Amino acid sequence: MVKIRVTTPCRIHLSLIDENGYTGRVDGGIGLMLDR
Image 1 (spheres, rainbow, N blue to C red):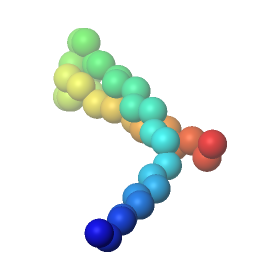
Image 2 (cartoon, rainbow, N blue to C red):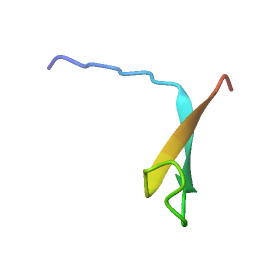
Image 3 (cartoon, helix red, strand yellow):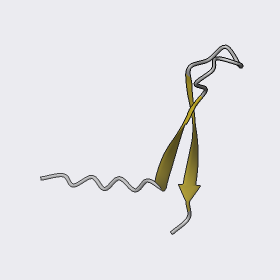
Image 4 (cartoon, helix red, strand yellow):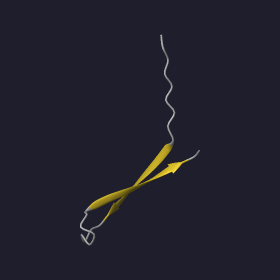
């Protein structure tokens, strides 16, 4: 049997909502990566 190990960094996703439509986008987002 072959074992495969996948390691990925942690990520937190924050949603940014433009309620009044000022930027022309209703929803956007930003992600933060954590080292530990």
